[in-house]
Length: 380
Ligand code: GLA
Image 1 (spheres, rainbow, N blue to C red):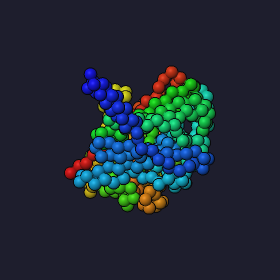
Image 2 (image 1 turned 180 degrees about the horizontal axis):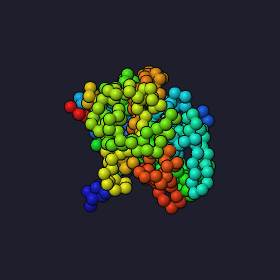
Image 3 (image 1 turned 90 degrees about the vertical axis):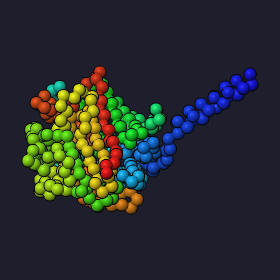
Image 4 (image 1 turned 30 degrees about the vertical axis):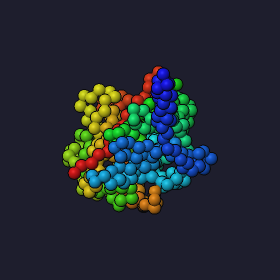
């Protein structure tokens, strides 16, 4: 009898400890925004050796530590040591969620159901990454850390009120990050609205697989699963055409060093790589993940594979990095990191219904869904 009771007591105590242990994800202060909000930093670990730090301002990735082929870890994401860096003009959306409409909208204008909308123009004549003061990269999101099936994550949520940054509808959003034991960062986006609206949520992490602050990504080798891209005008607005990458410096169908042809683009409006690629989905079902990109640093052997259910990926080669001071005293030189932003095409609101162009309109009763997986590995 005594043994049975002991067992019950032991089991109860053990399950309490196990439960508590499961709920603990280290969190620390990361500073205060200019308007007085507390910013926090969560540290997520995977059994495969990946450590990811996320903050609630901008629901952003602050660091990604990942082993190389010899097990040596480096932080491969650009960022700042505290929230003040992210509030400085040097931030360039490091690691943040961008939106409501990531990328550009021509003239900041679009029509929806016969109604004309005017958004803030913060990139020359155009709207970029959701606008100005209340774009999603600047919002302090609600955060819910979790541990499930041995994997850790944080779900961020925010409801953008009707009319915020000029967009229609109360837009309820969640961005769920899970760090898997296979060394992947899985980002799952969901949104609903109470009025028809347009949206394009994405993450703006900058990667250098040799470690943030390494001087260049010219030697990184890239493969993009795209036969076509969306050519742009002088202000980086798509012309509407879906053009073949064949015989251009944008042909990454075979793995190619980023630096091999980048100078052929220096004098163009993009100033280097800053293009939306039309992913080959080859009949994949809606919601099915396909490989968008594979990035390899031949020296360290670190690899990044990007998978998504979205129709496009923006490959941005860090043309506007200008040697600003980043984390741990490192500086971020011109073209020393790249972004692979899974998305619908830039300026889709002004190309709805055109052959090959994706839907970017969300209506009441529908749910926007987007999954992006950043999977890290090593190659010999
Ligand atoms: C993007 C754009 C670039 C640039 C960066 C932010 O991804 O395509 O042109 O604006 O964001 O610096």
